[in-house]
Image (cartoon, rainbow, N blue to C red; front, side, top):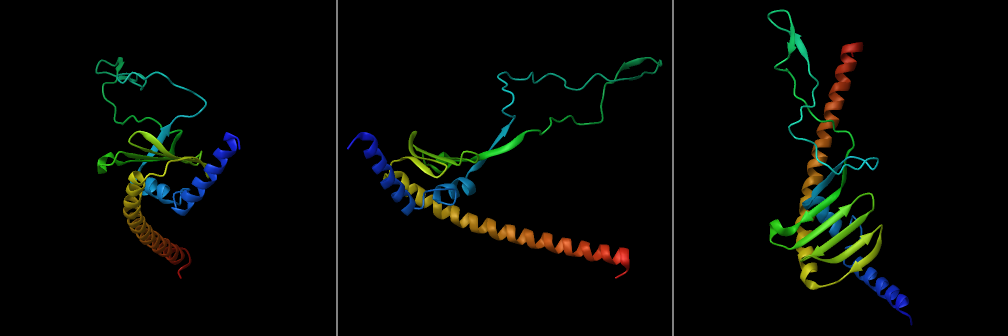
Length: 191
């Protein structure tokens, strides 16, 4: 048996093992931990441009504006009654990252949306990698799997709390919509 066939057999065994332990996919343990306990990865920009330099933080992006002075000459305006903000064009969520160092664990879980990619590293070494539902690496060691099980219990409880909170918010929004609808009917048609 050649090496590529042996690797395929081992990949199938690891995939079955990861599926039994509920590690695969965004609905699995790793995905739930990344979504509920992790932080969003936010990217600004697009693939159409690549900016490799930093903007000058002291540069004034507003144009020079002139106003009449006491002597009826145009002079630069000293104050402006507005707050300049950068545009939020091309800002999007790329995924989630969970960093366990704040919990005393040398564990990192990253989930990237557009690639459907989950990466787990333990003590700086990659121990799990999945891309689009296909397993590329899985090193089943009890050290990091026990941490995943502990984190999963916390993440599951947090997800239940979030779900209840979202249901309450949705119920309140529906009630607001109902009252607006009846108010609009009453004002327009006298019902």
